[in-house]
Figure 1 (cartoon, rainbow, N blue to C red):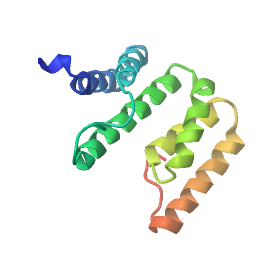
Figure 2: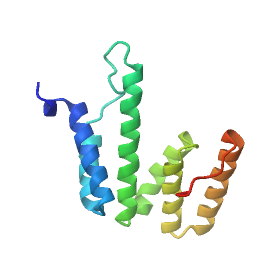
Figure 3: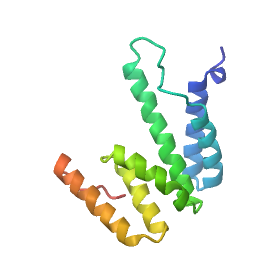
Figure 4: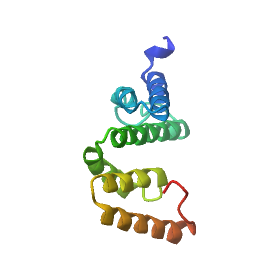
Length: 140
């Protein structure tokens, strides 16, 4: 099989291209590429392989990065209200994921919910301090 015949490798290429488009300021193209990449994903990574755990964890992290990039593209395109429910759900499951939390706070701000954005920041700051003994990074 050629590399492009394997969904995992196509996902990797599309996700990288989407991230590059987002970094270059082309949120529309990033959204298209990341949607295509995430559309290839079905179930857990490498689920049918034995001893898949270490490699699957790496691919799951890449999937999370692609989802985070797709949500960032939504914010850049002015679709904060559309992204906010997914961001809220993802953040509930990953309270220490600062980049994801920053996206949620931006989405709250962009939807005119500044007080909720400030409260969310304080919640994240407290969680990081309590669980890691750390302050939020510059992006947050």
